Image (cartoon, rainbow, N blue to C red):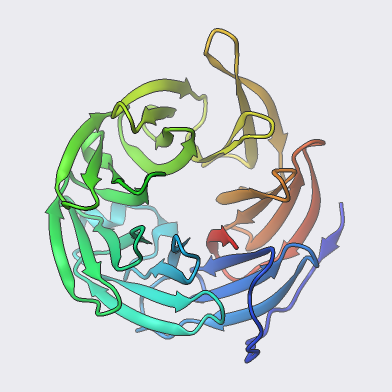
Length: 332
């Protein structure tokens, strides 16, 4: 393993951000870093201008790769979600131009939000208010005007646009349902029952999306064509983020409770079984595969680090100092 400590500075460069780069959002200092995946160094840092008490949380890239959307709740989700049951606090959406990180729009949201995503046409932004009175908010872009407010189950968190751009899927933790909403009509299509307390919904593979359930300690695989759960994995740990590697046909899953990455593969009988556990020195909050799925770029929110893992040897091959409390990344 090699260790590189990199100092990220604010850049005024106008160079294009094309190529193999990762955008990393940091909730501790409300910044976005650009990390070059070839040169393995930071090339730009942009500090976000927002009101005091708001924390940057999760980052998404628009379908046309022109815009970055970031949630800015007035709540630090790294302290846990339960605190929101005792307070009523707002959020924001911040939109940046992906090419140069220039701020294009800031939108006020009534409730603290987990993330924000664009629709396929890039003329709408979707986000959810994390509260017992669950709401999904749809805003026009670039005007920022509220277009629709949709009632969903309590404690909606991550919202995901499914592959074909037809549905938005939202995990409603307290209800143990994932709600599918038609992106065109903006009406609920179906509430799909999953295991207790779904905490996240992520893109999986094929027609499937992943749903992590923190009370049941499981992963449900939902088929968006059938709108129902078709597969599952039971864990002996509380799952965090799950990502599919199509090259190795494996699901990699982080653990909330220990510094491990767990690797699962589907057997001939269709059952997913654990193949390997990577014992790390720090908890991985989120990660993404790159370089033809041969490497994994991982973020440690607790230790403000970037880890690079070789997916073939399953070893850490690089450790880098990151911004404060990194909690989201997307690759360009």
